[in-house]
Image 1 (tube, one colour):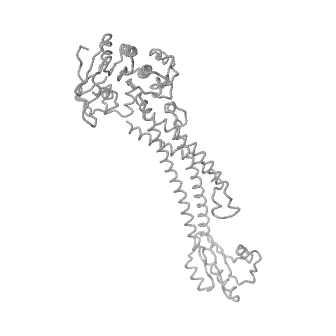
Image 2 (cartoon, each protein chain N blue to C red):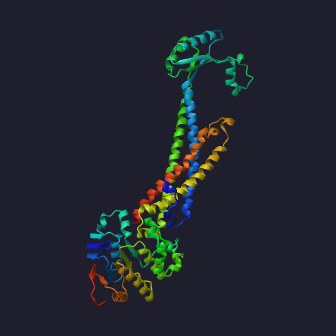
Image 3 (cartoon, rainbow over the protein chains, first blue to last red):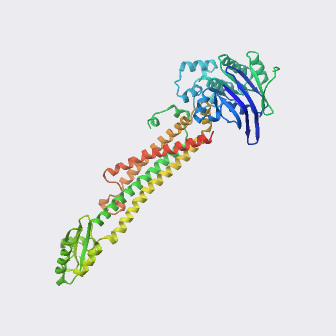
Length: 223
Length: 293
């Protein structure tokens, strides 16, 4: 589904990621940990072709990212739902319009019932007509998750999704991600919140990847 | 083009922008207003050039100055000569009344033409194939020493060339106005795209293609330019319409305007402005989207 083969990534200042080889299998649940600035966000961006590797091969759904045209990248992103810590919305559109944005840009008809069900699932059904600036941090994160999954993507990537949330809200978001994984979605969550990882491992067979010294390693079982 | 005018969902994903909308409409309006006048100038110059060039080709005059006792003999000699000259369809002496009318603007209607020692004028009409003016001059000098061929070339040709150049300048001005409008709209589109970088980022994240994102901006700018240019064309036409008519004064400047179906020509300018805006915004959008990657 997503595979890295001897991938390195360099910014102007030097190499941030080096010699990364891994494969995210369909239906798997991975956490990605590491200190701030270690390259977690960069790794996620490589996963949805926002960045291209300096060397090595990144393959998304059997296509090498360098061979993808700009249109093909857009089509690939429709199969990958992304949730950022500072999730951004179109502030002039309502919450429901923002959540259904992936359907809008794909030219797919929006089913009001499905949208309502999705908003109810993330607990935002009563805020469907609200504008994004009116939402709290937790509501924005859940809205971002709803937007990320409305197209029924194969992969969900979340970058510090609980960074701005309290523990209760973090658990609620984690529960939603676990439910999605049980539906067969591949989930990769970048976080430095070890309590969240422990909580998840108590519910599902999540694997933990750790970025250290520019490389990604499989973390020990002590988490 | 049909997709351009049909409201699309792409429109709503880009927030309405303030100053770029106003700038685009104003620029298109002002440029089209100027283009209407440039078009009027080109059309008027064209008419003038054609009229003068046509006159150059069609008629000439032989001016005959001779002592009174020889004037009739030389006039007949000139007419005989002209009758046998290839390229000349007809030749006839101007009547006294015609000469009076020619002089009337300078000397008034009561000029005693008969009492004045005016030269005799013979009007020549070409047959279309043209005649050898130099050869005719030489033959006139031999047959009627007092006859001078004035084929109007000396003074009309520079005027015709000047009018032709003026027409060219008019069209060149329209081209420059179009390029200026394209440049201004490109700047406005770039500003709008840069201001909406976050929106573009969100759209990219959810899988929007460049063509989808560009369409929202292109449609918006094209319609703004079309509306602005429409207003500019109407104002320009009104401006040209209130200029004094050529019939009243007869000068070149007062003849600046359109005639007949020519009044419809400025209506072509708004669609052209729309096309210019479409091309400029589309090129700017795709270029900027690649930069923003």
